[in-house]
Amino acid sequence: MTSSATQNTQASPPKGRLILIPNTLDLGCVGGEGQPPAPDLRDVIPMGALQAAARLRHWICENAKTTRAFLKRVNDITPLVAPLQELDLQTLPRPNKGGQPSKGQPNQEQAAISALLAPALQGHDIGLISEAGLPAVADPGAGVVLAAHRAGISVLPLSGPSSLVLALAASGLYGQSFAFVGYLPTEATQRTQRIKELEQLSRRHHQTQLVIETPYRNQALWDALLAQLHPDTLLSVSCGLTLAQGFSRTDSVSRWRKQSLTLPSDIPAVFSWLAP
Figure (spheres, rainbow, N blue to C red):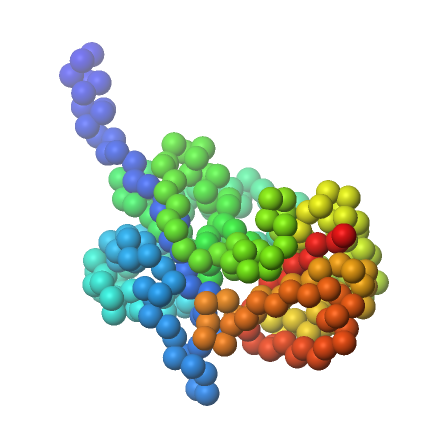
């Protein structure tokens, strides 16, 4: 019995870890024709996180193309453990629009997510990365993290930029109570109703509300916020955070209405407000 138990223990290697690797906030916004060059990764991501990324052979990513671009930049700073083409990059199942849970085949989706963790069960560390910022925060990945916990796989988050936290810190709005509510409806009537609901919540609970939008709809959302929020509500916009042309500005809605602000259609923005 003792010999058999020893053999079984030796046959099961220690589990690897799921390491949450931060990405930059600039992909798609810099480095292209007519755009400013991409900043040095070390300006926005700690060296320890870059070194951890360079050691990983197995990846779970939101987008393989942007992950390869990120790893090329990492390799310029600290050599990857293997050539890029030899790394194992697995893509997350595409989430439902708006992040709503599936009503179809949840068991199949869970099985697909669990299969991504197979290398960790064989003793290999796996990196989880999104297209920008911190994985599983306003981005896909939470399902993989939960599956890792259920499988007894250690989860290690590494420090890096989060547009939500940076925008909140730069806004001057109340940081002791805040809520990120994702995307607002694109249909005008539904969006108006949602804006008013969130403003009431902000007023009732003294809670800062944060939302994001697909960049090409930045201006439409901004115009809707100016039209629907109370004149005394404080409204903030942070655009292109960590980029050379990035900015954060906060003012009352009444004062914003007297200004002209044109937001770029190709750079992400975070919008936040606090009702009096």
